[in-house]
Length: 474
Image (cartoon, rainbow, N blue to C red; front, top):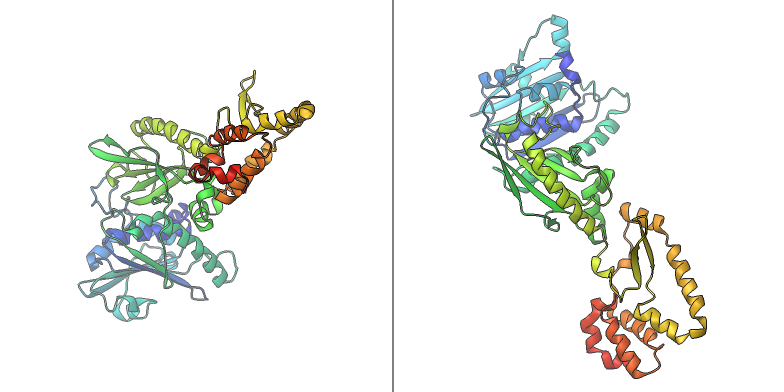
């Protein structure tokens, strides 16, 4: 039993494994309590269907269910090991108290007791022992429910730091993890039953990794049938960061950033198991960082996806990979286009101030477009300074701060140059530029050209309504 403690659970993944059992038991309310003092404990409580004495004894056995056994649609279990391995990865004493049809029973695995007796002995608790357990009062007014109680948190508190500091910081990570992993259950989105989770009476709010209400569905969903079972794929493109609020950006990237969390989000029965990976089908890049693909798999395909005990690792089968590669190519290109900064402002025509040219070695260079109406008018108004002005424009084009621009773009910074301008600001800019013209006809001609040039093209209706005011410089 000691050897199973080193499977590699984190606190958050261990608690998520226990919540899987709560969901499988049709719980709608899950409460997590932790006490950070000398008698520290963590309790995960639910109002699910509960277990009888025999059901609880079976659940406490190792490998109580075969991974090949057919499971209910809402069953998030896998090997019949999660309750024990997840719990004992964090503590030395696991007690499960369950109530079904008003009858309460409790069993305990105590590693210290087992070591002392040198025998695998499952303890069955008496009524008085049960009544004195932490959080037992949760079950008193319920017809059914279950409490998973962890005590002697040796692995969790091994650093020697104060219990309050350790558990407090760990539980922040637990909250973030649960809000993401179970976000569809917390939202009640296309799941058998909506659930609520709270930690020490503070509600866990769902964290949608796709920002579904604001993101673009890059393609129609695709369905792949494997062994008669459906795998559903939904690609999303997140909004450009310039269109995200600070809180939205933090919820999408968190401390890891958008770049690290791009890729596939694999859900098993609506529960997130793997995320932020391209499964080595594509390298994570800055231009694909807005691409996220939701993949829904049923629990009947666990073996093909090589799902591990912790339900934190999965590899798509070859048939799925072939289809995913095609989708990756399409969505990566769409993500790249989203990064091209409100494309309407980067015009590739004779009116644009900047032009992008391909070099002989298949690279690109940016330079000021001398054929732009504004530049042409400026050069025409100062014929004696024409050569000097062209030299200045060439110097500006050759000294673009490309590295700084790139860093600002990929480090999730908003570029304020790209903000929409007010109508009156655009009008004033236009009047100043038209002042270079020598005649009213020249002004009308340039004004017509302006309507095809950003930022004026974005204010076409306003300009059209105020043509005379512009021409008179009022």
